[in-house]
Image (cartoon, rainbow, N blue to C red):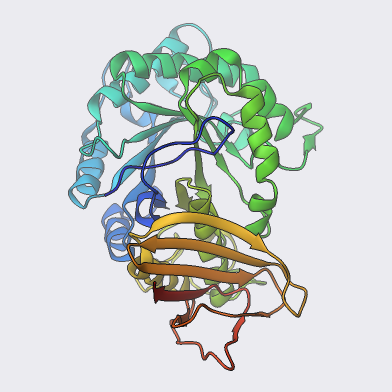
Length: 418
């Protein structure tokens, strides 16, 4: 696997590492209510080389000072045997410290609980080290702390920064080369403001600006976020604002890691399986085109009844192991150009239909690849001489008529040799 390039490109901070590949950057979400072995199998068949999973503090340290790593050890060892590098999300309350909410989800308070959480994170970093020095395990502090669901009470950005800062310092002391991600927020630091009256705070821009304290930024290696938006292209359009946020808050000379640690689209009443496949592909291509680790939520559906709609329809694979069009599409993409070096992603001028065209570019020696799509209305494209065209959602070869190919929301892969 090639050396990773995660950095957002800021003036004077461009990395010199070889171009990242889809196989470097693509990840799949493991959840806790589906048999782990079925998720591991799906990850391997799709071809994912990264996977995100949570380590809950209260489940591992049930009594103060006593850690039971047995289940986590098995999962992480199984992942690494398959060549899959974990993204480990360290979070959750702990009733042993008498600071958690009734459901055990609350954050650690100052004092003994804060020190206890820091010890837990340090122990995790000391225990789990990457078997590939060029592809480090990423340690993410908390999950969506800008929501009451995971923070356990109304969001408290400065309190999060203190807890994450203490955890980060403990991780670095235990494992100096560990890579730590801060924020881990639902949404992004530049998502449209959403002021929750009962919280007394905008949970996106205001929360992120207050949570990204100088002390935390001096310790962390980067930011993680969950850019769920109606269309993946909104992430690309918002990227200049995200770059401005990073420039305003980042405290180190080296560029930060920017990780989309949870992002995906479900089949629901308004989205067909083919729609989901197109959206999942576009999310992955946009994240990878920006040279960022992008974790698709999720690998396997957590519902047995496939007639239901909603959040349980995010999987690339059904609960019973059948590949959905989205799983086939991601696997098809990775098999076709997974090890190509990524050149980048661009927005092109409109076609005859006036629709903006998006272009993802990659290469491997003389082999070249471009992937084109539109957000909505169909358009056309003129492929390079000798190129072959394939619909990545269906796998069908697309006809080139008079030097023109029809394109639309389902990404089309053009491949050729120079």
